[in-house]
Length: 395
Length: 180
Image 1 (cartoon, rainbow over the protein chains, first blue to last red):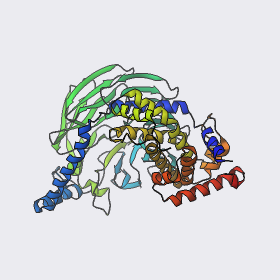
Image 2: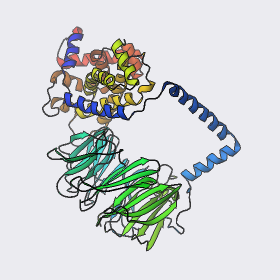
Image 3: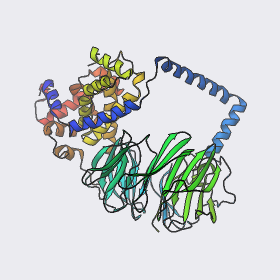
Image 4: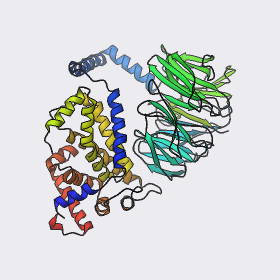
């Protein structure tokens, strides 16, 4: 074989699905190009200069004694101490959960399961996690791998895919949807039949509750799309004003919540029915942080932040205008989750390094647990991101 | 390979100024080779598509900073091939539960797609690093010096990988070594 023959052989290899791969890639490229804001020439040069000026100013600040003190305080606040005071008399350790079920947590040290008795088990060095419908398994992921795992830590299978994120197990238990790079893919619960659904924006897909495999996701062109996975047909699609932060179906499958950030200080909640009709839409002040449907009705636990404070409130998905404040505090709140029976709310309070278990939306009782970051970093200092609550499942 | 064609210079300038048709021309000109190169290194259609896609998205995000006097291909191919090597290395290390080995994947690729099995099967027996230099040299037609710069390797390493890779290909394809 000569070099020319080798080149001909390499050119003769036909990668799979070449034409469609090119079309899909062009759709993504065009969407990215549409979103790009061309930078005028002078700004291109001004930006490095401005960055250099900021760097010099920061260096000067750090080198001065007051500057060092500020930096140390910030480091202490982030790494070892609370930024704000949380609920007083918080328990120093998580001794038990106030309700049945177990909680899936992602910390800088990996994915953990918290049992009802408060004991914690580290499942492994994974980046994200989500429960299977009955909590018998979890789907976890690293940047390059999708993994089905038991709560005991036993790995059932692994699947290598590039840049895996936002995996979600279907309510039937038979399918897992996940994002691989800029593509939505679905694989069976036993790892068979892995296939691409289409290009997708970086928003976790949401399965319609029920035995049919119907999935809501967002395309790179910001189209909210609901597909029947088995047949591949689109049930409905509608354009969105911006890429949403979250999609979530109510437990009875009659409401689809879409939370769309409109600006750093404003977001919109929109509720659709399963046929794609827009039932409610309401812009709200603040920055959207998290939302979770109650397991038994159309209440939404909503976390937002504004002006240095955060708020947990309950919003009725059938009106959106009926809102009930539940808890407010300084700094940043993180995730929120309902217990499986819908009686307790678990709220992560990042700035206070606390978890709050809040009984009923009338706030009959609050159980606070402090030093959360260290509890998921045994032997360490708890530096890094605050532990994320991935779900409270299955009592 | 390192030369810059006038039409490409025009497409880059047009895309930087916001012209979608110019971006499309640039994309159509470069996508097939980028996708093929990624596929020949990773031997996985989905991964190759994702790697090539991400390389283009990365290019679009940094289009404003791209020096239009330089050719687009080497810059794109450097991203594609380095990411493909990383992906193939990670996959080899993981030894997935229930996943076919790379050689089997090459022999029994994704459903229904036409392949050139002998060259794919032969490539599958090489390491990702060796596959990469062969693809860069014999598909994309870069010189060893250009490959060394793209992969941040000494030129001697590139030459030795080329030699060993070609020898292994020749053995696998049962051809006479001195004709390669």
